[in-house]
Length: 116
Image (cartoon, rainbow, N blue to C red):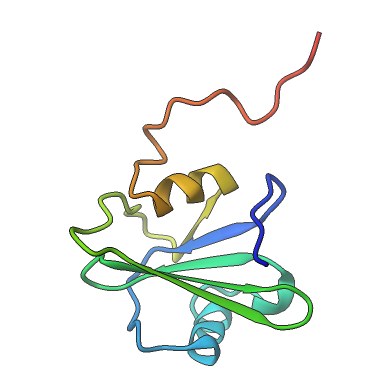
């Protein structure tokens, strides 16, 4: 099972992809475009051009996970616009994104705070 923990490394590819790509095609994009090793245990998030589908690629030590979320109505409303090929997300930001929310607008407590 694919689990997202606060320690998960999550990279979101800023530029859209052809969602016909499978595991091998997305792993190649990780290496070539994002300059990341897809076998490193991180989760990679990709979006199609129309913004209706997200694909997540992760390697768990035994094999790859390829997860797809396609909205039945509408589009994913939030997506970063930067000049870098990828953006790092936290696990809770990814959860908000998967529920079609705005991770940068979510008002949550800090991920870590000292207990006094």
